[in-house]
Every structure is written in structure tokens, then in C-alpha cells.
Image (tube, rainbow, N blue to C red; front, top):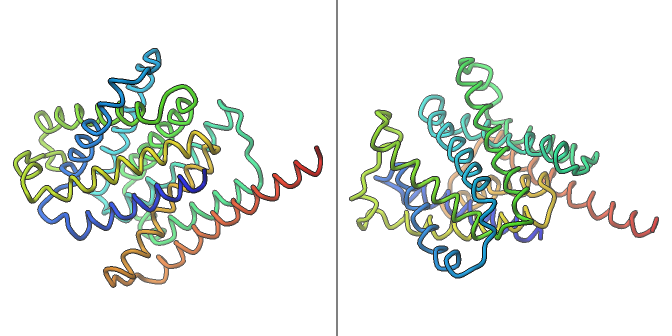
Length: 290
């Protein structure tokens, strides 16, 4: 099931590259709209003709609201403090996932997991350490809140994967996200939430369609990894999208990074490898003691 998490990260990294290089004239909100629409349309037949535990619909709606709030905060942070700092803080969400899963799901927090978590989070923050220190206090708190909400959203995902299909989970998330975006577009004066529907549905919006398809595949793979793996492991695998994006940018688009960013991806890789090796050792020890 590690493969599901890694393939999901690859899809997310391809999405990032498409948005960066082919998304000219499209805002983040417009990409998010396209992503939600594609998810709803593609998954609707599966939802309509499958038996789903509707008793958990309120919990699914709650997850959709919390996850959408986390994305809204990320957009506001990007607008005010820059994409690098905002996304780095947002990617600390595995900390909150680990704590919540240990408390409520009784997941074991091994030394291997803690060490891997530390390596990955420090790696994510390395390129922006100096900028975080200069952040206004209110934006620092807002960024931490966004990361915490993202962590809660992923925790709820782990909680529901045993009882609800991965398809229905993502379908409900897309539904809540779409409704929220439409409301914000009409009632918010903040330009970050503005959507030009004509642009999205024109030829200019073609990257939105591609991103929507990739997001659908990536989310379903990620949901599957959360179902089969521990919440900490699945959330850390999700961050492999960062080094995969750097690799794609380097080899395909000839984009070069500074040393801190290469150190970042090295630490993320080291954390994931350490986690994988630690899991293998634990399995061998269990077999020897049983």
C-alpha cells in the first residue's frame, strides 16, 4: 500500500508542474473549481449506483468543511506571505495527524515514526526558516491553524476509510469545496476567491480539466493509502509530492534550485526511507517473537 501513497504523490507533483507552467491566466481558485467539478462528474455514477453508508454523511460534510477551510487559509497565506512560506507551514500537518491518531485511534508512535516525522518536517521547513522568524504573529498563528485544520481533515479521512468507500469520501469533499467556492465568489470581496467561469470553461481552462483528472486519481490513491497504512505513514508519503515536483521541474523544465531546497528533498527522502526500513525491521522482529 506504500505504492498507492507514492503514486498519489507523483500525481500531485505532475499537477503542480502543470499549474506552474501551463496555468497562465488561471487563478488558484479557478483550478480548485475545475478540480471539484471533474471530481463530482467523474465519481457521480459510482456514488449513485453503489451502496454507501449515509449515516456518516454528516462526518463527511464536516471533513469537507474543515478541509476547505484549510485550503482557504492556505490561499490567504500565499496571498500575504508568499507561496514558499505558506506551503511549508501548511505541510507541517503530519504533526497534528500523528497526535490525533495516537490519542483517538490508539496508533503506536514508534521511535522510527518520530525520527522520520522529525526529518521530514525539518526538511520541509529548511528553505523558509529565516522567513518564518520574520512573519507577523497573526499570520504565523493563521498558518499554524491552517496546518492543524489540514491535519484534522486527514485524521477524519483515516477515521472514515474503514467504513466508507474512498470514492464517496472524495465525492463529498468535492461537493463541499464547490459549494464553498461559489459562495465565496459571490459574497467575498477578496480577489483570491474570484472565479471567472468563462475562463474555466474556455480553451484557456483546459489545464483545469487535466488537473481535475489528476487530482481525482491522486485523491483516490491517497485515500486508499490512508485506509491501509497508519495515518502518520500515509501523511508523510503524501509529502513525497515535494521532492517529486523538484525532480520533474529539474529534468523536464530545467529549473534549478538553491542548496536549501536540495537539502529539503534529501531530508524528506531520508525520512521516508528510514520509516520504510523501520517498518520492515519491526515486522521481522514480530515474526521472530511470535
